[in-house]
Length: 147
Image: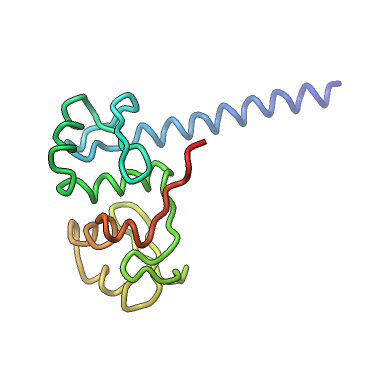
């Protein structure tokens, strides 16, 4: 019985820690329009997932010109754990786990040195556009089905 009680307490602590980590991840999300901290109550459907905004005005701006904010919205889908990489975002080919680059804080995998080099040669917003644009997102990322 004592062992069962200890395991139960350990399970509660582990569950609390995992819940806290998930909450921290949500707290880190940035609004794709303003760059401020996003709130879960200001969500909109996008590319099969939910994109979060800081206020009720930003979704309006997003919906008015979605293309302008696509890279940041897609990056948020990845950062929030809703999307996972399945293929190279440049070519759509099978990824090579040894060919990587960090773009906007996200580790991105590529199929070959050529695609990796193309992204490495770009900088800042151009890198994000190469791997997080709607076209690249559709080639390389998959949104998990909501449970």
